[in-house]
Image 1 (cartoon, rainbow, N blue to C red):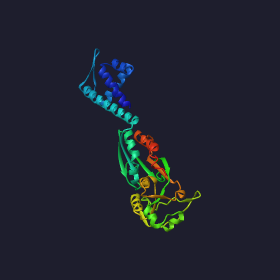
Image 2: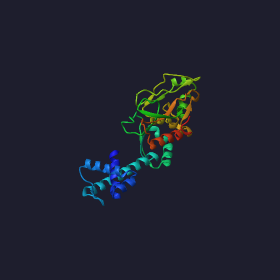
Image 3: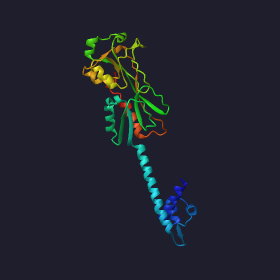
Image 4: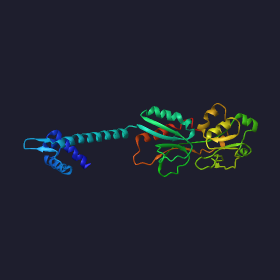
Length: 299
């Protein structure tokens, strides 16, 4: 920054036509300006000014150097202005990873796009455990716990899973009235892609967790096949409310054992730890916290 300051002194002196004029523009003494120019000439190994008792003009090298310095200072000012603008106004490219069921979260995403038209979204839908930093994501929305210490996180809300089946299945196989009744039914399970483990059904009785060795009729690593199978009478499944809200509303799926399900689902938004949180990530995190958990996501 000292060298940039010296370049500024040179530009102001050249444009003013004298050490005195340059000093006046900069609020410095003419002696300080003269010493700065002398040091610059010594470092450059050329004379930048023709000096006489009556005038001071640029040498050929000085004219060339003045044009270069003006361009450097102009580009620096432009860069500072752009950085300042980006820091104060949310804009730019925002890469976000959502679970495959994230299509059902699009109302909140669409509302964000309307609120911040200067932010361009790049949405990646996957249920795999992405490496947020290595894969260049700005933010990730997921359910479950956070284990990556390189990430910051914010809880967006909790939800209660729904145990559902189709009316045709219940007519043919009977309706379970207690959690233990599930042991005699066809159960459709979700497997975590990241660990290979089955996602447990959050059953409870009298406020206490209830673990049952449920039948595993079918297993899928994404929830869309489970919705399809349940709708078509292949069994009972346990899924997040945002994934089956439409099917429950239109009667294609029926909720079961509502008094025996714990409120265990957690939505979080994750982003890389950084000393400076960019405006585009900050407004996305704040907006999702305020808008993602609308009535359609709740139990």
